[in-house]
Image 1: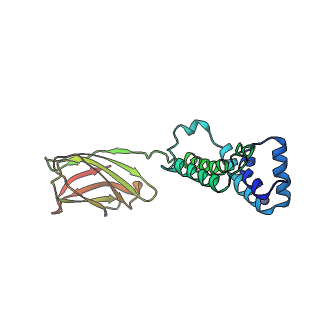
Image 2: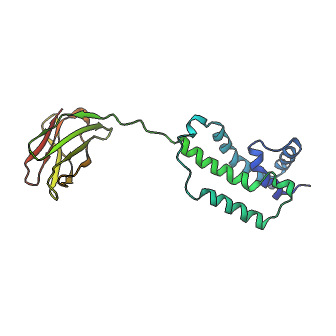
Image 3: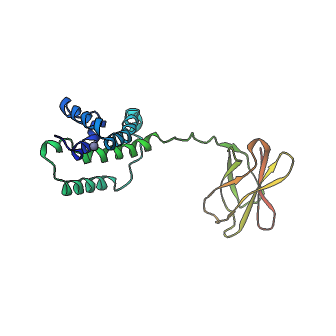
Length: 218
Ligand SMILES: [Zn+2]
């Protein structure tokens, strides 16, 4: 007679389709009379379906699972074996390995199947610089929430606060954030405005006195 504990430990392997006919039949027979094991199997089964849906070609690009996951799995197995010595023929099923392995696989599958955002469309825009010390280029990104300005340049006076504003079709200027000059070094910063790309006609960078040091007309 198989016990509830033995059959419960076998559920991970059962969910993955492991085991010979007799072992699977034993699990099924136990499931008929044990609601707790049926519930556990029901919780494991969706993970199996997710494993089946994985595109192996995408696994190569999958980010690594969280650091320490392997150690956690091994520790869990060690603890399980320490508290519950099981006969050798049962270890073949390695229930703890199967159960934890399925959970770990779920984590990896979740990583692999996470939505990968499309690269943002960058639009290079011309920049007119009014300050001879400044060199700069800019791209804009049309987001659903507004327009992002990606500004790269050098020669912005170190320690000076620069203000960026986007010009709207109707001529209004809308703040898009500030940045601090860092002198001759390369400066890359992203500035966000609530103005949609189609409503924007350009942007300006003003120094702390309000003088336009850089402008872009789209
Ligand atoms: Zn049971």
